[in-house]
Image (cartoon, rainbow, N blue to C red; front, side, top):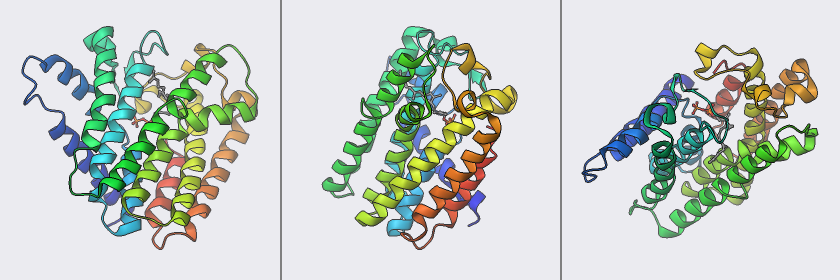
Length: 294
Ligand code: GRG
């Protein structure tokens, strides 16, 4: 399989899985919230995190599919974070993944509930699998919960809100983004390794890869908020400066940001080279994000 074929394969598997899981069967009378959950979860998106989970699992044990329910669960948590982040009480955005945001279509209360339901049901989905050893499931779910919570993504969002209107220094911004964006990338890699029964050395290498990739991804996101195209991105640009956020371009300038993205990508790729036999997909994935336009 080429890189593109594998990336599309993981995305399709995740989408088909979510499409089947998020259905209204057995939810009589609850069609509206399921529709709201499906609206955002099946709205496209790069499906980057599921690809990381499935690929780390594949290169650890040869079987990517074993990680599919966890990859889908992680995508549900990612989707909930986007729905809530777009709410008027957070970033107040109208466009996401090229479509009106969840609250614009279903109303604020339903958008809050759709996000809550995606978060909660992600854990139902991840623990539903009875084919895997309970010890592996427990470790993977524990990692997912930690990285999504106060020590991870939520903690990053809190730092982000606290930082509005202030100019954070580089180290503080790195710490913030390591949680806000990095945490879900890290659990994507961690879960793949846990489920694939990777060695501790491989797990640590995957952690370094995901941390560097997450930071490079966020810097590129900040760049795109200035240089990007709204149509291509599927979301508004300029929202960082509108929301008075500290960003990497504000601190470093655009040229240094482009350079930093390349440096971090090299770091990500180097960190897994000696730990896994087949790193070609993860290398291509990292380099494909350097010049991403969406
Ligand atoms: C739960 C209230 C609450 C907030 C969560 C982390 C977060 C706070 C929200 C996510 C919003 C955001 C802009 C995070 C930064 C990470 C990022 C660039 C997300 C977009 O990820 P992509 O580009 O999105 O992978 P797609 O649409 O491709 O899946």
